[in-house]
Image (cartoon, rainbow, N blue to C red; front, side):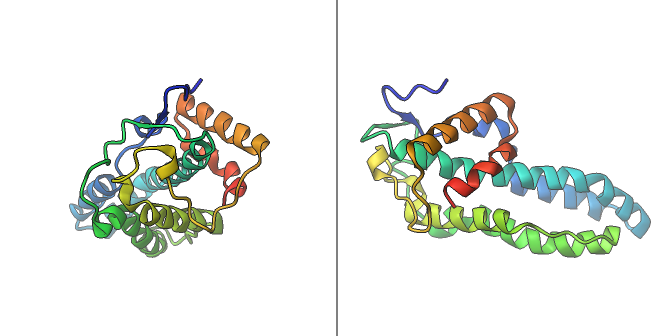
Length: 195
């Protein structure tokens, strides 16, 4: 059970369940580049492909989770944000958005790679693209959270819906569940409450 009596944690427990996207993708492709033979590359890519899909799905769940958490804690009244490691830092839009932009570009690359190495088509659903767009907007609106000291400081993009009390309770329940089980992509059904 998440306790928000004395304030809201900046991260309710998501970070422990994600592995960095960019280094993982770079590692996978460095591994692929070691093979000169196309058939070996193809076999290697097929082996990595489920891991890539899982990494992408969990990362999008993480981004959605951050938005859901912000929407939830914004409704708690003015409470301190606890353990915001970004607070007081220097804001750089380029640095703040670099990971999101990498993922957006990588999705386009992945479509080509899947076709090239497996002959299959890779497509990403509209909801996932909406999550990426909303997260980008959310990061920009909050300037990378360098000035986010209290829940009142959180800025929610205009495009987000305002959930009802019942929906807020469902959001909290969903967040608590994925913090326990580590399956951040299980937050996807909650996207419709905010996007």
